[in-house]
Length: 184
Ligand code: SF4
Ligand code: SF4
Image (cartoon, rainbow, N blue to C red; front, top):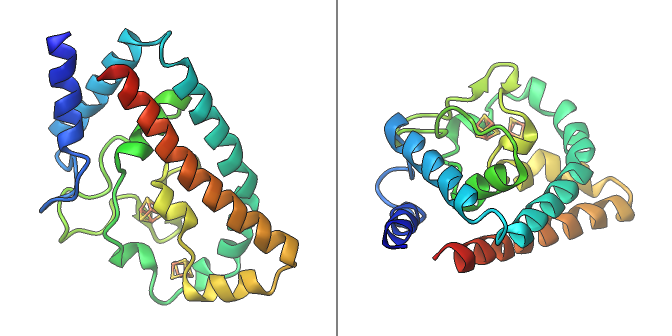
């Protein structure tokens, strides 16, 4: 039990914003993912609610992917100043927990190893990660052009997007709280 508490404390230390992105080095990334695998394996039965919450998040996220693709296809390929090159975003603890609990591929490294870099998954053809494996911020963020385009869509479509983002953001917190309650 003492070992498990040490593992949880080590993971939680990296949740908070610091001088560099959490788990920015390849070694730290491997360690946090190994530790999460271990905790989930160790508490697998007790984590069934957390797993259900992660699967519910997946359904809600997938429900807005086609809308997000529509918004992207008419803007991003011609963008003169791609936001991903300037963004200082990373996979946070909730993102990582979601990937592990819902059984999705975990990217091989954190997006950035320090804040002077741009995201390693950007390419001139767009993001190289599947949508489901990207940080949540990369999914809900719409640039000004995309916001204008969304406002031109039917009110029901706008409402669907707004509602999904709210529910997913809240659901991520519930999933994290449930995980911490079980493993700590
Ligand atoms: S989201 Fe907007 S700013 Fe970012 S690459 Fe697409 S069009 Fe450009
Ligand atoms: S993960 Fe993808 S969407 Fe997010 S900043 Fe990197 S390239 Fe952009």
